[in-house]
Image 1: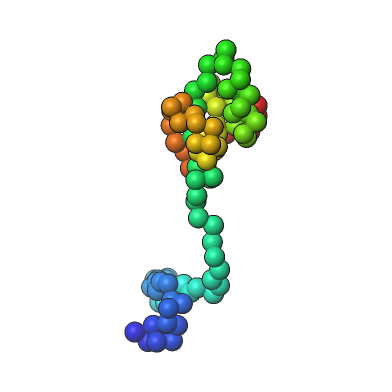
Image 2: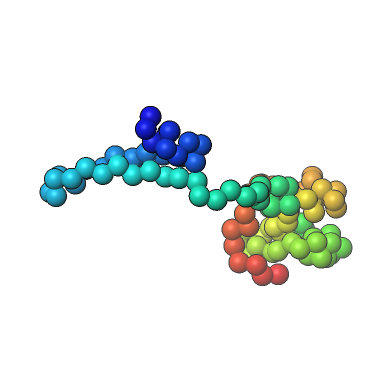
Length: 106
């Protein structure tokens, strides 16, 4: 309670540790020292995998021009969900991921 009175809403966590060899006990605190608006994971940051057949050249070009990346290993295209919706390609989505996991090569 004393730490709460001292630090108020800035107090995040209190930890207790003991060093048996040195014969000491430690009490540590975690404090908020700075606050500012943060980035939230919005639709533009969610990547999805798209299936586009080799012969669908126009769709491949659309995906690539919208910032899509070809994943050779999985043989799928990666594209931000925002762009997928804008292009109307939702029916081609095979999986979701929070962050593009591979090298960006096209």
